Length: 188
Image (cartoon, rainbow, N blue to C red; front, side):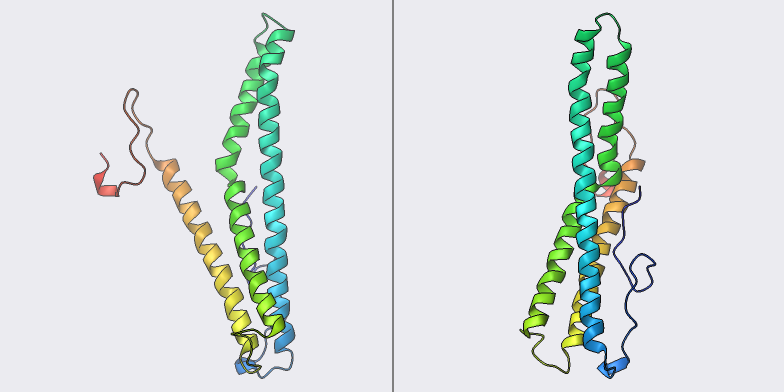
């Protein structure tokens, strides 16, 4: 299951209203700006909820299966197949969390949703910087786009870090693990 990406005007997952004419000349600019903010807010809300649900489901299954290992050993003494299979399931469930980044996604999407919500509130009441009717729509679209870009940049760093970690050679037996924050030239 791939990590969802934030909506962009070219994303098929997040259809957006048609763009206004340059310089805010389009009569529908206010509707476009607020529709964009609403759509992006909704996308991040749904994505955060989904990530939270998947994280909680995986963690709950992990605990339940891990707790079942000693129970199966007691119920069927001398038969190691049950605990062995359950132990394998525990390993797989433990590997899902870093693979799919549900906890990171939940936090990132929640922060982005909150940031867009703050902009929507200020826009709706005409608070600074949305107090000038000539610029408020452009400023809202700019603010929402900035939130999307920041979240996408964070996602890109997370993916790059995951790939770098996957390529990192395993430490030799008996050696202390290398610190992960060393610059590339300082690793042996």
